[in-house]
Amino acid sequence: MPVPTTQRHDVHIEPHDRERALIKDVQDGLGSRPYTLPPKWFYDSTGSELFDQITTLAEYYPTRTERAVLESCVSDIAEATGAHTVVELGSGSSEKTRLLLDALQAHGTLRTYVAQDVSESALTAAMNHIMVDYPGVDLHSVVSDFSAANYRDGLHWLPDYPHRLLVFLGGTIGNLVPAERAHFFGAMRELLHDGEHVLLGAGLIIDETTMVAAYDDARGVTADFNRNVLSVMNAELGADFDVHEFDHVSLWDAENQWIEMHLRARKDMTVQVPGAGVVVNLEAGETIRTEVSAKFELSALVEELAAHQLHVRLVWQDPDSRFAVLLAEAAQ
Image: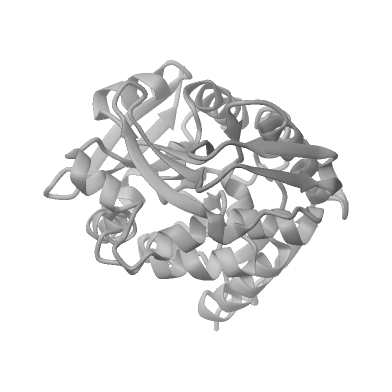
């Protein structure tokens, strides 16, 4: 009989932290030109449902490609790390992580799964399913913003269980601009002991047409997802954005090596955001940048990690080199 699962649940977000963060981001991003909003505000319940739809679209290759790569390499990851603890950042439904849990369980080393997410409800729902499917694995959920204080506070809230594998999948690393990535990798290295590992999923630079189409599907689901950030502003800060007067724009910035998503105003407009004390004056054709999604040259990403004493030991890619999964070791 399996040993009964133990569960621990930590909350490092105060009730008003989300509201304060939203107000600050709106004041910083919409208080002056060029206008920007961080992509994390896409994800209310509607935004999460829309993103789930995006991951199934023909144009959106990253999710299915990463999963295929993981399916091919999880046994190698288990063999290479022998990890006792899986720590997942932004765990969401934990669906892809089950591949890792299964492999480590088969390898005989898995003891603990730590799931971190900013959404307590999503985290609780996912862990309830994990508890049923992985009896005998100790579970620890952490409700937090892992980006707090340039990632150092956010990551140091994670528990120090033995022999950890820190997992950051989905290509989400691409949402961080280079300075943010430097803070993030530095905070990772401060967290990890020598010999512990990081598993990172990253989109690679391929042909522009395929990359842009992944963020501008023919059905318009990504456009609805993009515009939903304005609905969040309306609902939570009393803004008066006319959501349907904005066009979705997706483009490749070759200099910065990232996809940008924008919302482009169809006409001149003045928008009140009373909850943040901001007035936004938009000219026809002016945009609000809502997301960057960097794509990487593999050698450059390996160098970025190495600069923070995270040394890439193994790399797996799909046959078309669209997506890579990197296993790095924390070492001097």
